[in-house]
Each structure stands twice: as structure tokens, then as C-alpha cells.
Amino acid sequence: MKKLHDAKMLQTLYQSLTKSIPESLKVFGSIFHINRGNPFNLEVLVDSWPDYQTVITRPQKQEMIDDKDYYTNTYHIFSKDLHKLPEILGSDHIINWKQSLIIQGCQNGLNEKIREAVAFKPVQLDYSKRFLYIRDDLKYTSNASKLKRSQEVNSSENMKFRSTNGNFRPSLLDVSHAKLVNDNWKSGQNERSLRYIKRCLQSFPGYCLLGPEGSPVSWLIMEQTGELRMGYTLPEYRGSGMTKQMIFAYLQYLQENGIPYFWEVEEMNEPSHKVAKAFGFHVDCGWHEWKCVPAEML
Ligand SMILES: CC(C)(COP(=O)(O)OP(=O)(O)OC[C@H]1O[C@@H](n2cnc3c(N)ncnc32)[C@H](O)[C@@H]1OP(=O)(O)O)[C@@H](O)C(=O)NCCC(=O)NCCS
Image 1 (cartoon, protein in one colour):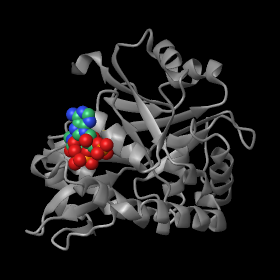
Image 2: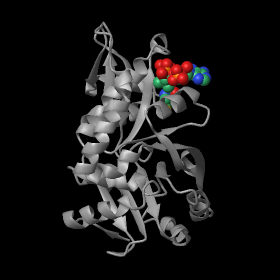
Image 3: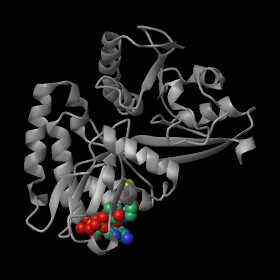
Image 4: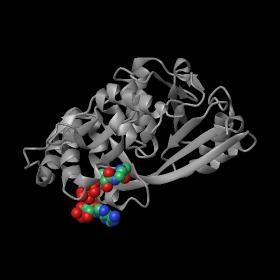
């Protein structure tokens, strides 16, 4: 695998990956943000260039200094040739199997190949599959005129979610909200996840609805691939339309700024499925994640 540094090549790769959405989504979204300042210091590996088959994004080496920090030690994968993946992923030069880490991708055939790659490694694999939700305007983000048209359609469709209650105000989140987000994120609630959330909030726009006291009552943040995560509404404000007001304002912000986004939802999370569908998201292929922990760290 070779590292792709050149800005023009990265732009070419980004454009090419649009043709493989939604399967390419995790690397597509990473490269979008790499091309806009690379706040997570990620690097891009391809098996060959320009006729690539496999693309992997991962943090640069100096970022992966905490062997137990799988929030940071995260790899994203897309491949047009899944057969070669076990050999590629099995190499310690591509993935540092001595660390706790996460691999994510949106291709249904990945699970078998990742299992093959770790078959003889002393690594515990924890696999989860979720529903990937995208909207049709996602593919337009690299085309300004089409994006504008899709924004107009989306705005009129979502008029009904506009805030009518002056006591609640949509707002961008900032790093001072990291603790609140972390305390209510079921995959977080530890020091490493807090550090990760702070970094997300410093690097990408997160959004909330501020209540009468001026603190967030409902929120959603963006991570390094453009995925919307950690959505939460305080229990006392659920079922009141607050979540939809917040999401309406957030999606409008993302569309106006040409930032691609997508969402994943666990199978049993019925409220989230309903919210996603209410905003015109539809399910496409799968969202897959493998949490890998070296046996010696268990
Ligand atoms: C997911 C969450 C943000 C939704 O917020 P909310 O304020 O409850 O959302 P809404 O009131 O708009 O409800 C959404 C829909 O789900 C429905 N709903 C609520 N609870 C439900 C349940 N237990 N089963 C089925 N449907 C349910 C509502 O009736 C509503 O349907 P409608 O759009 O047809 O009216 C909130 O429940 C939450 O914070 N959950 C915990 C964290 C979480 O799961 N985050 C999402 C990660 S993807």
C-alpha cells in the first residue's frame, strides 16, 4: 500500500469515490475532511494509483500513541476487490494489531474478510452491524449547483420542523459541551471518549437546541468521516418535537456549508429510525464496525 499525499490526487480520489457511495462512505467522508484541513491528521493508503482497488484511511502514526485508545485508533476501509483484503489487512504495516482499535466500513462482504485477516492473531473481535442512513443529496456535495437545488427542496420539505418556541434556540456546540455529550453517550463515559469528543467538537460542527436555561437539551455531533453520532435528547424533552427542531437546523447548516453527512442507527432504536425517515434519510447497505482488542490487553 502507498500513502497518497498529493492534494490533486486526493481530490481525484474523492471524486472517484462518489461513484461508489454508499459502500465507500467512510473513506469518502474522511477524505472530504482531509482535503479541508485534515483536523484529525489522517493519512490515506491505496493499493495502487491511479487504478486503485482498496483505500484505507487511518490516523498518522504520531496520533496513535495510546494503545488503548480505540476512539482514535480507527481505520476506515473501502475495497473494490474484497478477495485481496485479508492479505492487506493481515499486515502489521497496515494495521497495528498490538493496539486496541476500531475498523469501520459500509460493505456487506467485509466481515468475512476481516475475520480471515485476524484468524491467527491473538485478537478479540467484537463485530456490530447497524443500519446506514443516507439522503439523496449526499452525492451532490461535490457539485455546487446540484447541491443548491437539493437544498431548496430539502428546506421546503422540512418547513414543518421550524422552531415556533422562542425559549428554545438552535446553536452550534462547542468544546465546553464535551462533558455533557460524553456523560450521555453510551459508548463513552470515560476519559478517552471525552478527549475524542472534545476533538470532534473542535474540528467539526456539532449542533444543539438550547433550552430556556441556556444549556443544550438535544444534540448531535459529527465525527471524522462526516457521520452524525452521539445524538441525545434529555428524557424530559423527548416526545416534544425538540429533537426534530434541532436536527432541522443542523441539517440546514450542513447543507448550506456543503458538508456531507450520514447517520447510522442500531436495529432496536425505533425512535431514531423514525427521526431519520422523517428527514428523508433512507437505509442503504450496512454500517459495520469491528472493535479489536489484543488478547494481552483483555
Ligand atoms: C433518539 C432520541 C434522540 C429521539 O428523541 P425524541 O425526542 O424521543 O424524538 P421524537 O419525540 O421526535 O420521537 C421520534 C419518533 O419515535 C417515536 N417513539 C418514541 N419512543 C418510541 C418507542 N419506544 N418505540 C417506538 N417509537 C417511539 C415517537 O412517537 C416519534 O414518532 P413520530 O415521528 O411518528 O411522531 C431520544 O430518544 C434519545 O435521546 N435516545 C437515547 C440516545 C439515542 O438512542 N440516541 C440515538 C443514537 S442514533
